[in-house]
Image (cartoon, rainbow, N blue to C red):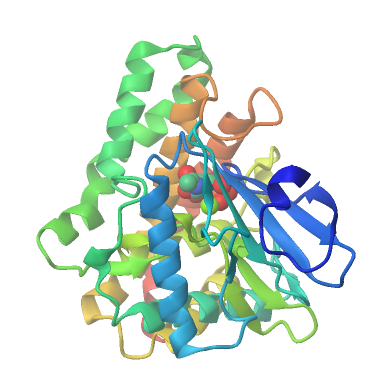
Length: 352
Ligand code: GN1
Ligand code: MG
């Protein structure tokens, strides 16, 4: 690890690298040097991200575009070059390594401590949407093809059920029924986009609260992290994934489902932050589909977690045997509450 970190242009001598963050896909370390300056070293999972050059090219273009709009180094990720001038390491075994400047004085939260934290994360993602609105989305590589193509995620679930590779279909019958009952409505946004009723935007696609850094003192939004899935997509998915994760009263993998609820105050606060910062960039139809985005992306995550459970946990990092099943169930609980409160949510959103 340290030898890899030493290939980058850091200030000072590297003392150690410690595991960092809570991502499910990539591996991340905090790099400590004998100077106050800290760095983040990341090994990108190239089984998941099959086009590492395309991914890094996206990241370089997007951070550059954001930097032109706001040059404050705490407001946009800054990649650290290698001593030989390259932007990243892609070695013979197709391992991708990169380094960023660590943003000092920031925090990433797994749960909003105050409503304002969540509103501010909405502002951060709304600003992202706003500032990327004049960037031609078609210049970006689709780093994971069909990432939020919900019908395609359902196809993968059907394959997993049919193949039953881990012999777990029998353990997941209620979950399978729940998800299959909702399959027909899950393609709504994908179909609207195909009919050109929704525009393709530059979207982040993984807008979990812990992918935003807030100032640790003021809790103002600083910068958006995890740009691997930035690609052409739908604004409703970005909005929706934030709600899915951050407006839940419990963790994504909570076992006690009595604790899992949709917090409508948090939902509203996020919408205020997000829509306020998007300004006039979203169309009327995009705004109307934001609640659909929240419901469908939550359903999509349930489908993905269950697919991985049935396939024997080959995609997401797990810490216990039923981890992906627990994650599936929390997402289902949230979908149920989104369905139950649909008209209330739409009313609330139209007043934001
Ligand atoms: C993965 O690795 P992480 O935590 O940033 C996943 C997201 C899921 C999320 C669920 C590339 O994100 O799509 O919504 O887990 N990222 C990828 O927590 O699949
Ligand atoms: Mg991610």
